[in-house]
Image (cartoon, rainbow, N blue to C red; front, top):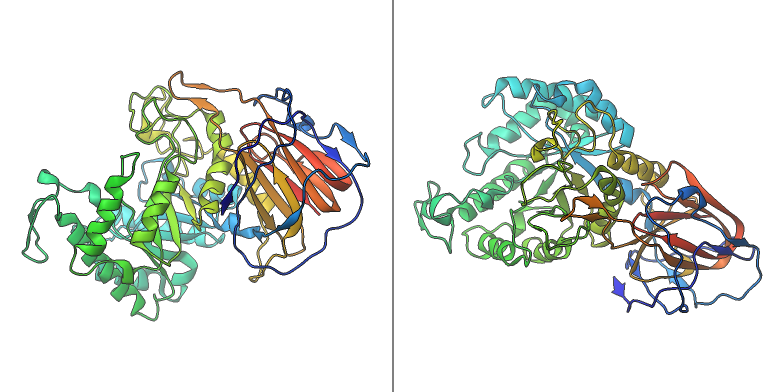
Length: 514
C-alpha cells in the first residue's frame, strides 16, 4: 500500500473519453491492492454535486475527443473480484426464536437476497439451552443449503456454557461429514476482556490457582487456555481440522487504541500459554462512531488502522478478519458509545466499509447484524437498530447496496492471478482498488474518505463532488456503477475510452473496464 500527497482540486466534472483498443494482459503478483494516488491536474472551481445528484447523469460531458493522456500510466495490480464477495458476511441470531429470527425462511431469503456466503453466531449447546439450540439446529442447515457457512463463537472462556471439548463433540455429532459445508470456522470467546469483573480482573484463577491483579488480569489466563483448547480439540480431529480457528476479538473503547494493544500483550506475553501458535486468523471488532461522541467525524474508516496494528501482535504472519462491524439507525437513542447513522448514510457507508477493511488486508468482515431483532418504532433502542434489514425483513439501503456490490463483483471459480492493467488514477483524497474477473473484465472501485453524516445534528451531509480522473493506456469500453444510489449501470461511457473524469461525492463508484 502506498500513499501520495493529496493534489489540489480539479477544474472539471463529468467524464471525457478517447481512443479505441482493448487493454492487454500480463501476469503479476498480488501486492499493493490499494492504489492511493494523487496528482495536480489543474486549478479552478470544482462543479458542485451533492448526494442527491441523479446518478444517471454522473457521467460523460464529452466523448471521442482526440487528445493526449495527461498522466503517465503504470501497471496497476489487481485482486480477483470475487475476493470482495468473499469478504462480506453478517451476524445472525437464530437462537432467539421470539425475535425476527423466529422466521427462519425470511432469514434465509434475506441472506440469499444479498448473496452472502458467510454468517456468524454463537453456538448454543443443548445442555445449556435446549430450546435455543433446537432453533439454531434448524436454521444453520437452511443457510448451508444456499451456500452460506458459519463462523461460530464458542461460549464463555470461564466454561459457564460448556467446555471446548463439549462444543467440538457437539459440532461433530450434529453435522457429521457435512461439518465443512455448514461451518467455516470456530471463534474464541467473544470480547472476553470485557469480562474483567471487580478490580479489573483481580482475583484467584480457578484454572491455575494463581492470584491475579489489574496488570495481570484473570481474563487473559482464561482466554489463553481457552484458545489452546480450541486448537487441540478441532485441529486434532480429522472431522474438524479443516475449520478455521479464529482468535479472540477484544473490546476497546479508546480511540488511541493503547488499551487493546495492552490487552493483546497480556494474552500473548504474560500468560503461561499465549495464543499465537493456536489460531489460524487474527480477529478484531470495530464500529464507525464507536465511542466517538460528537468530536469524531462520521466515516467508516474510523479506527480500523489502530485495530489492524494490533494484528501484528496477536497474529503475526497470519491472515485476519473483522467478525463485527456495523452501524445502528436508532436516531433517537441517547447512547453516545455508538453514534447513530441515518439509513441513507449507512447505505453509502456499507460498500465503503467493506473496501476499507479489505484494502488493509482484512480478508472478511461480518456486518452486525442481519436484521433488526425487535420492533422499535421510536428509534430509541440502539440494540434493535443494527440490522441490514428492518424488523419485517424488508431491506434497508445498506442491504441493497451490498446486494448490488455482490452482483457486480461475483466471479466464483478456481484461484487465479489477475493480470492487472496499465492505468493511472488521481483525485483529491482519492482511494481506489482494482479488481479483475477471470474473463479479464476490470472493476475499479473509487471512493473518498469523507463524512456524509453529522453526529451533532443527526442529519445527512451534502458532499460536493471532486473529480477522479482515470487514464487507460489501452482504449476500452467503460461503464459506471454507483451501488449505493442505483441499480445497474448509471452511465455507459461507450467504447474507446482512454480518459474518464468521474464526479465523486461520498458514495463508492465502480468503473467496469472491458
